[in-house]
Image (cartoon, rainbow, N blue to C red; front, top):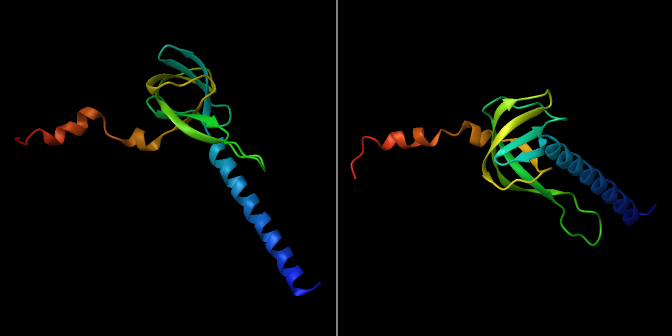
Length: 135
């Protein structure tokens, strides 16, 4: 094997290893979470079959899957944010009841715990620091 063929084969093998590793990381990052199984007004039923069930009071981020158009290789699914929900009751083992906080979720949208919103102070507490200030 001459030198150019050897370098081409090594580059091809390394490229395949990097692509496989990033695809596995992408799928593991998006595999967590549950899905909306029923919607009744502002009440959502969320089931977490392959992820831990969130506790009462946790805030969830609601995301919708979309697959971008690709002429060549099949594109991996992507998700965009469609709203938030707060867990109000834990029902049957994999399912919980949640209230919609904002957005317009649809059935089968994905629900993932949203740590940034769960840790954020309530709006009432955020305004308390201005109480002693004069305009």
